Image 1: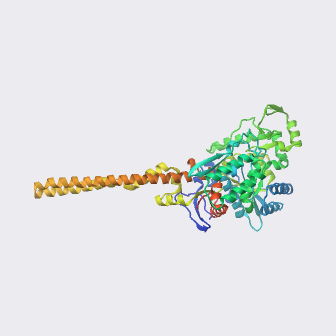
Image 2 (image 1 turned 45 degrees about the vertical axis):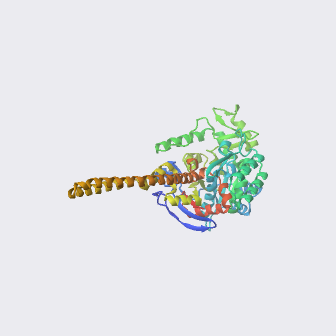
Image 3 (image 1 turned 135 degrees about the vertical axis):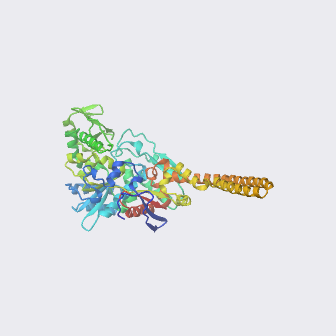
Length: 547
């Protein structure tokens, strides 16, 4: 389907129903606003004209950017890396196709989370694959690339996996002291990972897919030496058959030296450009996502052990308590480019310096970051690729679908379960007995007036009859209230259960739950179903997958 997100309402859902093994793929397409409150990202997806100078191109009217990349060197390094991590022939074929001038890259990326981290990482990968399929034609081929952001070092963001245990969120942590070491250099603790796999095995439900999956994960663990490598091997296991190409920047650093050379020669220019862009966004009514102190440099130096050292500049470079001249760093770059690492601001520059990037697939927060970097692309004489919003999804299992159907509620209503329960209770017997009493009293008053005309002695029997009727109503109301209280307790348990499943800890399911939850239950068919759902959706939509 090809509809603008503009004007969508949460209760006006577009439904497509198709059958696959064990799944009903319902692309009940929820709008982009369902998954984010990031206003600038929403306005970009809705193609707001005031953002034309912020995002020079839009996915609704995209064109391929101009670029000049060394395809031969790029292909050689991609083949070397992907063969090392066990990529299948579909990946090798896609890499080789990048040798041709009519082949372009569609890129996404993420930190190497434990077993890929929350579901949105998987959804970014599938989004990239689907966008390539939609853009490719007889003349141009688009290849999906996943940038394993193993230059990052904040281990607290990626050191856990969350599943459901008896319908409650259950988190398992990877116990390690990382000390700001880049994930590309952080050794994988195989015994710790095997401990986590044992916990996953104990808390997850039995299925026909479980044993084979866990065996494969143990095999990947044995073959991996670093956290970054484990992530790449796992992603190739999930998406290699769909041709997803993996890259880890540490293996391509020598190809990025011109970028770092310019960063060293103009150490604070990118910070100035970034902060100026933030000021322009404020004039448009937006809150910029990033602001940096004037002396901050937008790259890191890695120690011999892989620790990421921050760099500032005040006429000299200050790194880890030491002082370096511009010549010192240029010489080091010439001798050992692997010591240099991009930060979140310059990572897109290294990406698009290396690749013939036609498009980048971004989540809502990433789009907001991208709003501040057009000037930095200009500084490097690069053209920004077009930004595509990733697809999103909420998985609704049969037990949850029954609750939704029984209480006639929509998914988005479960975001606020207390309000939902209050609304449902009001629909039951709200005011029905008060109305009944008023009607009885009115009719009995008319009867008593008529009786008094006939015989005054009839008034007392009428009053007694009225009392008996009202007492009977009270008894009936008490019985119904008792029964309703019991029903409400059941409804409360069911709705809380559904809320915990679809909005664990009050957040979107895709931001909490790991893909192993569904790979164990449904096997890799789950990924094919996600793919099918995204193919049927429009860019940026949040689909509902019933299984």
